[in-house]
Image (cartoon, rainbow, N blue to C red; front, side, top):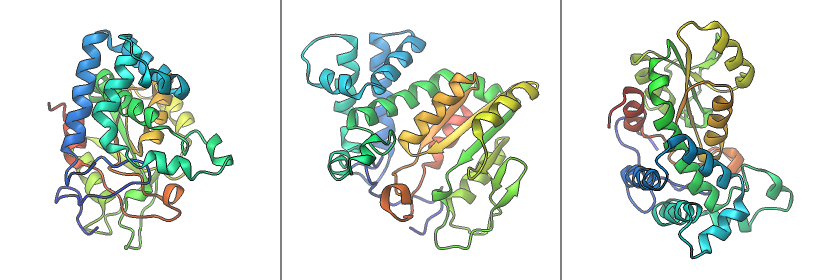
Length: 274
């Protein structure tokens, strides 16, 4: 992968999910997840209640699996079945991944995400973006946390600690972290590579100190992103997030492999377009 963000992302398979599906673009995924959110809001127009229900189902994978096979018109069935219909093209590798897990790893709440949990997490991220975007954009101080797996793996990364955590020093023109960081700074957002910061303690501290509020943008694989966004919500910190195009870090693959993020979706979210 030798293209930085903004110049096109070649399709990449993930260990469990890929937002490309069978396409050469992630556009279909974002259309699908928005269509799903719109449909669910018709069934339950209260956004907060809908998020709570999606989150409840996501934390109960056995219930979600039962609802996926049940023939009823309940809201839970509608959410799970609609999510499966629209988002299953992007999670085709989940079953094979789960079948190869050791017994011990089945107790890892991130590694053992079921296909229903992926669909519900994708929906929850979209719904939380809608719920929090206005407060995020209105926050005086906005922080972004990027995963280090997004960097140019062929370069000798010169990122260094600055204030909160590691920050990109633009050592590679084709590095996705570099490209995203530059664009975020243009919109008044401080980008950091999350390496060592205790985010819960940090957000609690800054939430109290920042006059005008604190907002957070997260970028991560789907399971990690939804968990981080839930943490922010519990801390009453407005949060928005964009998933990586595929999960390809060492935790999933055994070694780091190049991944990407759709920069246009990041900018659309922070600017409030669409």
